[in-house]
Amino acid sequence: MPQFPPAHPFDDDKLREECGVFGVIGVTDAANFVALGLHALQHRGQEAGGIVSHHPDEGFNSVRRFGYVRDNFTKQSLMETLPGPLAIGHVRYSTAGSKGAAIRDVQPFFGEFSMGGAAIAHNGNITNADALRRELIERGSIFQSSSDSECIIHLMARSLQRNIPERMEDALRRVEGAFSIVAMTRSELIGVRDALGVRPLVMGKIGDGYVLSSETCALDIIGADFVREIEPGEMVVISDEGVESSFPFRRKSSRFCIFEHVYFSRPDSIIGGRSVYETRRQIGVELAREAPVDADLVCPVPDSGTPAAIGFAHESGIPFGMGIIRNQYMGRTFIEPTEQIRNMGVRLKLNVNRALIRGKRVILVDDSVVRGTTSRKIKEMILDAGAAEVHFRIASPPTAWPCFYGVDTPQREKLLAATMSEDEMREHLNVDSLKFISLDGLYRAVGEAEGRSNSCPQYCDACFSGEYPVEPSDMIKKGFELKAAE
Image (cartoon, rainbow, N blue to C red; front, side):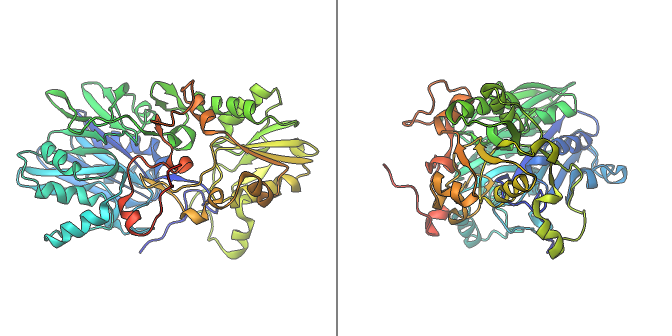
């Protein structure tokens, strides 16, 4: 079974969104547009990708591959095997299912029903997948993958509804957790979000055709115009006759994942009408107000810490500088990771700008601290370069709880903030100071002027608060303990 390293070699100290979805209808050679869209969404999943297309004369065709989009879906000979005006695609970093999974776990998944075939690509995580899988297997279903997303196909197969969109509605009513789905039939492109809208999904227009995407940045790459976000609990069915919208699930208050603003989404994307870049810059502004420190230089941990560091520097009046330079060409296939290479750690990816750092009191701004392993290495590099002091400022609250809605999170006991206070983390990292933005500060940065509504939070922030909007039933059965009510 193939095994793949983390998206950033020698650095598994980040939370990772597990996939991105993209679909196009009404254009010539739709699969080519999907490949471009997936390339723009590569940050959401680097392990594998897949595309399914449909041509009126040749039917459904699919290709699934391990590795980057650029290494697989740019070859003309391969793309010619995916003809037609309708296609969907998926990029993956595994959460549910086996790590370094088999090719059968790579989406989109395809099913042949009595009324025709359908393919489905899922972003999110089904929190009752174990229970559903047991039930389906007991009733005779034969699973081809270890992915929780395959449950949706089997539930659709057992539905008695008359067409595929209705069968999908029927199936998704049994599903708990988070899902943003792009699916296709022979003539329809379908998009649907769970009632809480935890994971993103947007719609665009290209010529006479339409696009569905996890993020707006993928619309830009193909020259599509942004139309709107798919709303929480909404299903859109797009065909030659236009866009049909419905709300098949009981309406609830939206709980969009706040970490999309912090880290997952690309900074050039738009979420809820707000620039992700501007939101991250504003996080830095709030952080400077909450946790000022006397220093000489504000330095981002590239690349994800850069916008927040710019905001921090502007608000604090402390000069901004690129004290750490990232090697942009560090890929999966660099060299065999021998023990000697592993010991180099983050130095293969990040290098200190010694002339800028030497003798300075440095504020390092990063997006998050998960295990803390990378933070310690970066601190050591900064001190080795001659820094006088090292202060960490983190553009998210302490990550103390795992995510069960489509993010690859370590077990809770491996999260630094789950076992240590802020002061204990500072001592563990051995830095002069360590401060995280408050949860209210983060909410203010994303546009909630009054901060977090504790009675009805505006976002899913379970990784910070331990308050899960959908009970992770499978994990509870395995012994996971929810946060006790205060």
